[in-house]
Image (cartoon, helix red, strand yellow):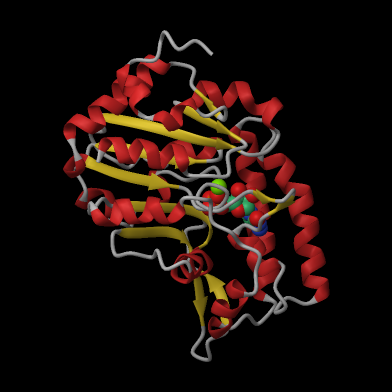
Length: 297
Ligand code: C5P
Ligand code: MG
């Protein structure tokens, strides 16, 4: 790789030399990182996806579960329910990540997937009091370096907005069990609604899926208004749909987007490199994110 175009800032973040790192425009990355460092912690906010961004995609050649999969694979789901959920995953996941279909084509199909999967979950009498055990018994794993990531943001009082199309109750519990669910974190996701006996009765709206993570589903949250002075954004995602997560931030001055390219790497490389400032190919760690934070904080 040509190092001539790597300015002093990029050299100051050794993690950017990792073989997993790809940048279409290193000079742009250089400029944004310098600006983030210069303008400091008061101006910064971090916006991140959860599943397959903060959580691991794979471990020892096996897929790790998403927050939905944590429920799908748990013992509270009947065998029939589990089969239905697996069939839905095998049908819709290839559509979700298909680089040859537009987001417009995918959107109605994602609504279908989430709606069908939630309907199956609603038939299972899931108890609120079971969630902690379900998470504890699952194979979920967070990315390597996750403690450094959460600790740095917490110590510097930097707001972390987790915008997830997964299941809010489940991902919060994952963070709680990892002891990283700090007060600087705000989650918007699909939350469960339990009846007075603590049984799941519906999902609270609006439904969030991979391709509507934007202002449209944030109408009711004042979150970004409260952070109006934080005009610098670090955005982390693993899907092309994650790039719109910062749309609700008014007056963005500097934004650095980092995309984890986990699956179908060869087929999706071109689109990811065009869309994300930094693409991390098959990188199960938060090393690069932590290296950048360490430099700018
Ligand atoms: O947190 P994030 O927005 O990444 O969560 C969405 C992910 O959950 C999607 O990438 C999708 O593959 C996965 N999913 C799932 N089961 C469903 C619906 C979505 O595993 N029923
Ligand atoms: Mg994701």
